[in-house]
Length: 133
Image (cartoon, rainbow, N blue to C red; front, side, top):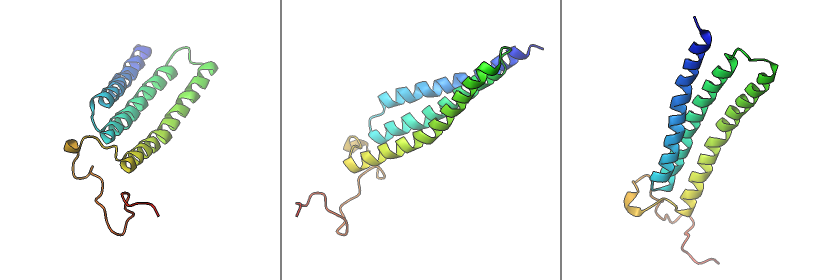
């Protein structure tokens, strides 16, 4: 049995869906109208697609007949990239969503759902329209 061919096929099963998800994240960022929808389109499928592509690349790298000490450094870099992507993408999405909510960058009023709309003024909160003292 040709093990190299089998591991190539397995890595391809990870890389192709991963690349499709990254591509769909880019299309979603362009096509979606509101800021929160764009943040969702950029972070969720992009992170998952990136992880799938890294897993496929790690499988391909480790199963290579020429895998030696030199490629172990590449493997370490891929693992670090996965960790950094998992740590930074959710934080970036949360910060972008928070800034969009504070600045009112939601999108057109007719496209907002009840949950997307900014909160109505409440007397116990600071009124942003009131003149400063």
